[in-house]
Image (tube, rainbow over all chains, first blue to last red; front, side):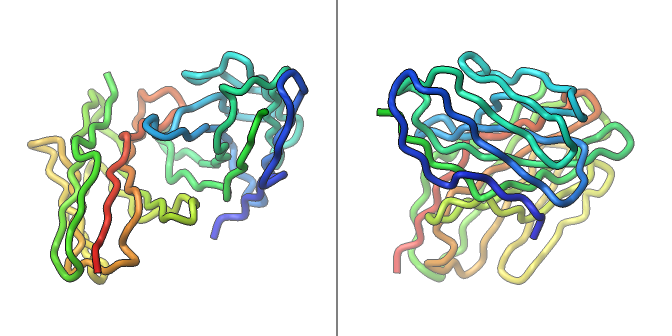
Length: 115
Length: 115
């Protein structure tokens, strides 16, 4: 199993509070991703990183920010949580060879409930 | 354009039946990977298989088999003699030289195996 951990695994918070989710990897992979999964929507990409301090937006990035100061850590921050951000959040990692991304491995997920 | 389509939203089969999950993809890349992931009711996302665009050989792993056909842009997944433990949501995904550091996922097929 790929060494990916997410913390916290469960969180309940109130609307308007900031929340930070952490993804930690021990695989030294260059690429890291944050997805959210909601019923009926499959996996939707929030942000991703292609190296330390290199990040880019995904399709549902509004209301989220990310930071990657070390290869192994990728943080997702909800600046002011809203009920629409109640979801399951997955972190994933990948490497690339010959310009093509190889297998993406997922963390165990974080269940976030915003009241 | 890059796209993955899993037209079957939900499938139910009786235990021991064979079942095929369809995956159709669109890409203009000549070099790409196709993937299948399993998400059981416990929620984790488990990597099942990766296929390289240059390798059209079918793959068999126990009760699982995958049929990759470039002519029809399909990468179908068959479970033989299904079991209750096969009940899960299955995702097909694509990465290529022009997918912009991202993976493209289908919306998933929910498989229920009835005992």
